[in-house]
Image 1 (cartoon, rainbow, N blue to C red):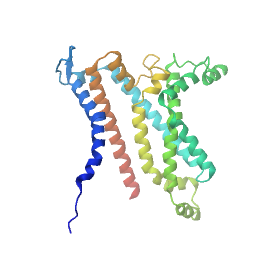
Image 2: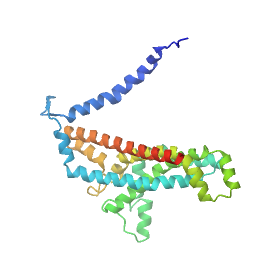
Image 3: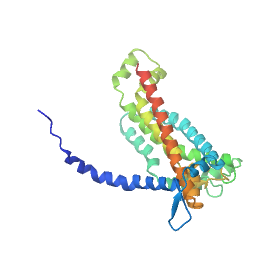
Image 4: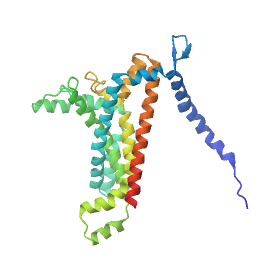
Length: 290
């Protein structure tokens, strides 16, 4: 007997498709339109081809911002992934304290990004901030508004404080999915704590760690609000990442053509690197399973 297909269910999805069209597809087509055209005003456009893309690719400022962005994402991943795993391993597996730890770990994720930036901007000040005042009291010269290294330190520490809990929660979910029989078998075999982590816990966490790496890379590569609130991209251009340069180009200088080309290339870089991360980690997962 042939199965009867009811295509009326697509009408339930239609509102979502319309919403996505207005919120994503149409703005994207508008950006593409600006990226290949130029205007002298009065909403009159003429074809400019790939000229804006060539200008962006040869812009030294964009090259510098890209280098800073890649360095920032690499530092964030190198710190947050191991730290999140370590925190997840230390969290209790069940009971009241497990619930308390989960709530505490979720609190930083509930704070809006601009509020996080404001908190750390005030915290790092030497006149009214606890961190800045403490460092000054200890005799350590601290001024993130003038020293590029200090600015990087406070931006990195701020992001680690804000987002490490996401990695910890994902790793904790992976640990909770491991059956107790695995631990019992390891105990019978007198496996060391390192071997339990290496051969039981880490392989079982690879799926959630892949999600954690992809999410943290994309978030760190698109970061804007927090460093802009704390340092404004300074001192100079020390913490001026790609997103900050893009906003300055689009809104500060009102160069819509180069900004549109810049944003499309920005999107393609994120997409490409995320695909590379996904491919490499899934291949490693398959090799571990053999």
